[in-house]
Image (cartoon, rainbow, N blue to C red; front, top):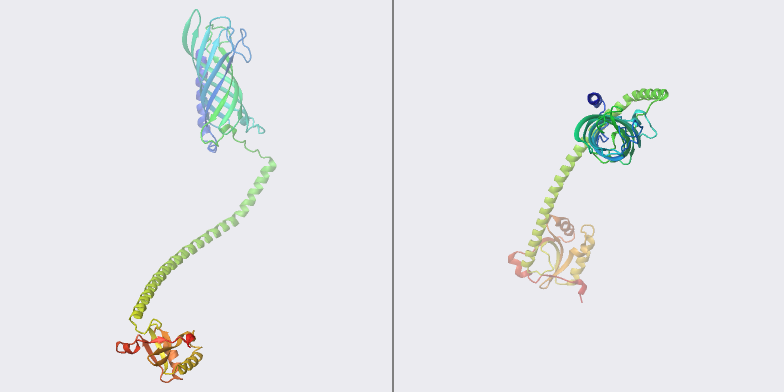
Length: 416
């Protein structure tokens, strides 16, 4: 019996390896699901109420009690239909009317066939999974009684059925019933069925490893079966797709051209922006230079004012002188006529045409002009009326400073 169980175990293992090798290469689209999982379970080994085989109960040569059972394992899902599990289970056979006890430490490799996939149970396939199990392994057991004690190792095989429930992507719950066909020496009475059978009912949890949003592979949705009409419609849709393919390719080519054009425009825009940025930088540099020159001119004007003896009211620069007399009223008349005549030439003739007093003379001046050329239009217009009009620069030369040291504007608003 022992050699027969070993043969069954070897054949089961070889069969599993052959099938796994064939299917592994055909199942590359399941990477979005969890394959590895840890299984934890606990339950009871149902006692044998009497001699002989009893369905859903253990079957030994002596009556046995119901005893606890615990186990754990690692499961690998090869395909949605098929998983392989390697695990450990502790069983205990305890005689009901004697001191016989046997502790069994069982190592098992078993196949799990998922019926939700095999039978295509579409209505429940994504949350309830009935399954079948079959496997083989080794029992390390210790027999104890008042008359005899011994340890031994024997092969075993198992068959069973169960049902799993999907709770979350990470956790599944299950319950199952399994027959454990052991050596006929478990109860040390090698008589009866040929194997000592332990019937165990367990429940537990399967913890799916990997990313938390990956379900176990056994919960993969079933493929959709096409009816003949659906198939014909699929072929018709494919034909329409083939008809629109040239148009799609043309649009794709046009899109590529537009993308190339857009890329060219982008490059040109970037070059333009770079050029504008450079011009802006140059303008900023020129502006800074002009501001520096303006500050220098302001400083120079301030210096000239400080050097000028003609009073702070007269701004250094160029002036057109059109009249000089000792009578203020005559000077005022000349000023008023000049303002009227220059209204189309000067922007503010009332401010630029003014009267100065120096010693006993009143002079009518027009200005100030920063450059000689700025005064040409005004000078030419005034020469038409005052032929002796001339351009005067303030401050005056050094040899004339004494004559102009009391030069000042006449305030016509405060005239008495």
